[in-house]
Length: 185
Image (cartoon, rainbow, N blue to C red; front, side, top):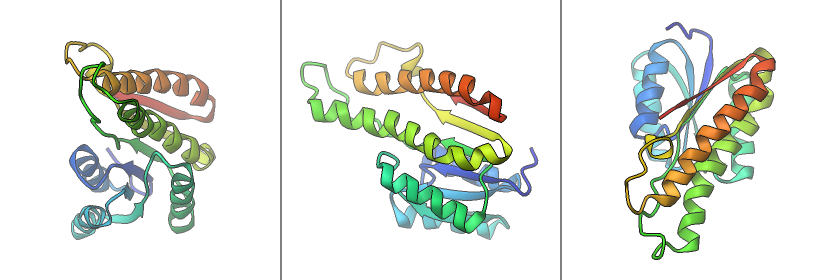
């Protein structure tokens, strides 16, 4: 995989899958926009990328907030001048509880972060991606596609199923701009 000269946004890049992906993409030559909510975690990821010879900037934002995501993409455009890929990875498990015990605010929070956050990430990245085409990868879960046996995972599973549907619709819509959309479960 040769990504030399490419710029990739990775959300949730301060830890877990996002951090691992950011490091791997940087090793392949991409400049990484490391995005998340925790400045200290983002700095560690960016420092590791730079220490291994890569290039990275940190972008602090909450993916569920439209104004923060607009500002994040503007920062990427200002500092890096382009965007070739998006790894929409950030998300939460939310509260896992039986439906009768799950509070409406807990349901809403999980769907807002996981589903709205994915939408906002892709939506605001599109103007930059449309310039040259590129790639969008969305982290979903088997809990939204085929494993429906985890009692209490209703909000999480619904948010992940929604991401799969969103990815399918986005792939159809964005193909004409030479933007690939894939989902990983």
